Image (cartoon, rainbow, N blue to C red):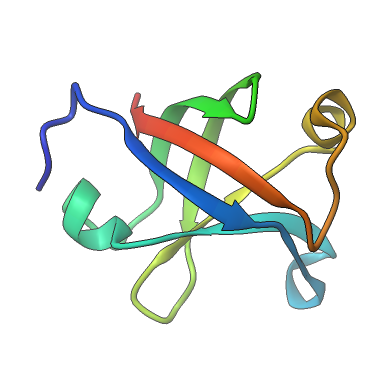
Length: 91
């Protein structure tokens, strides 16, 4: 498990998940190793310049995905297939 005071930073492509109600999400690389669990994880941080407090959800494939609310997408001017800069840490 990584130092929880340090943020996990990465670029991610937003994608739609039709099987989860059409949510727009990003995949979190190495999330299980970073957060030490495959269960949901509450995190705080930034997506581009927008502050977020979200719960990372297990993908069922050994990782996590982070939901991006419509208000956040509007604030950063991004949608599915766009790239965002993510900086998160455990809440």
